[in-house]
Image (cartoon, rainbow, N blue to C red):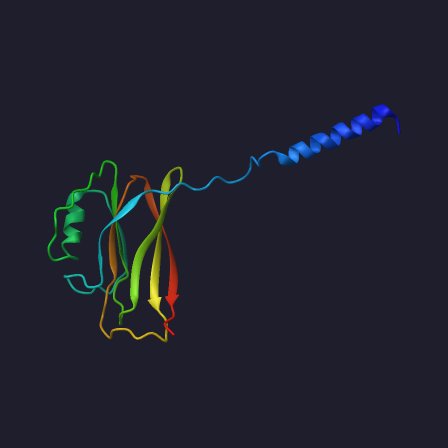
Length: 160
């Protein structure tokens, strides 16, 4: 093999190796998260157990206060700046026993919406639970005014 051909092969191989070391420009960047805080959560709304599940987004103080008053007895003044935030209610509706809970696990931010990830926990068949109607709920404050979408996951807790 001639010297020129050897040099050309070496240069091509060297460039190929270098290209493999460069970062992948198609790699996905991590999805940013949105801060949130739990306002209140519980199992027994004061207005009674509602049979229907609810996912609600509040965009104003009056509607938030009205709904919050259906869930907790002493409504402490919780003012929300609705020009920069939203409030979300997750209510599992009536459950025939204890052993259920609902909690927001994460909120991811996309270009024109946020995705609220909700974890529903259920006691496994081998768990001792209260034999009473419950209605697990959670109000959270979300630091975003984008459209809010939801995703849910079910976690079954085994007790043995």
